[in-house]
Image (cartoon, rainbow, N blue to C red; front, side, top):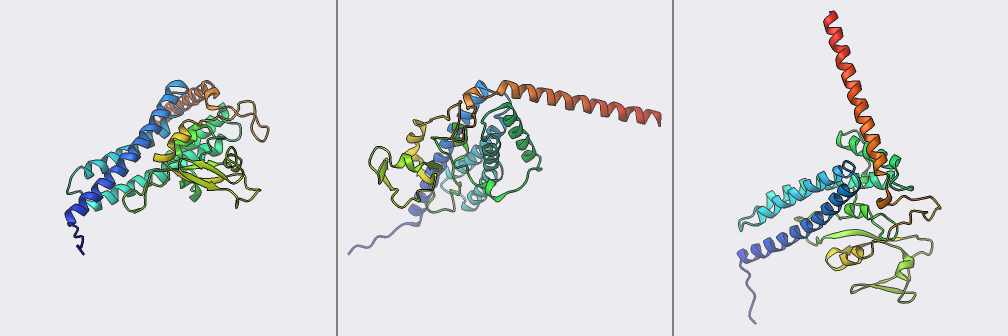
Length: 280
């Protein structure tokens, strides 16, 4: 029997191509996220979406550094691992926390001026290192296409341990309601692509289950099923303001007023300091 002999250089080249393909998938996902955020900024608010845009761009910048390293046949694994650690730090301590704070402060009324303002201020505290640290906030946001605003899908990308996780694939955290699983194809199964998910063992009291769906096979499901929460109410009878009807104009007015107030206070403090110095 002929034995297979692998050239170490061939193995290294194969690994390089695999890692490069992973990085390309992540770049594609964040390109999509950034495009969505920029479109919403252009359509709704000049300032609200800047924070998630900034940190999404930081993620993409590190991904491009990783890709540049992988363009070379003599790529350095230590450098790639360090870049991955930087990537995870940004994703978990910044971007995921931005998403979780938004999920908390935009519920249950949605994109009202007050909720937008509170979310924005919490993001400011995060940027200044003043926000509370909760381990759960470092996780990606679980996104329910049937109930959540599509805004939250931006924060649903799972852990980007591209280099060190042998089984890594680009995935998003998607929530699917049990009632959706059982609709259309009988009581026990609903097919997603080539996957059949049994719901026979799901607790009847459970309101939802979280499924990690492979982006390359299931992304089209989310993209074509962006079903918004009705603006006239939610499951709890609370009026929900959707993204497209968000009170962004009022938020911008609040932000402008607060910015001007802080400027006036700063000028007043400087004038008082100058008078004190002159009197001395």
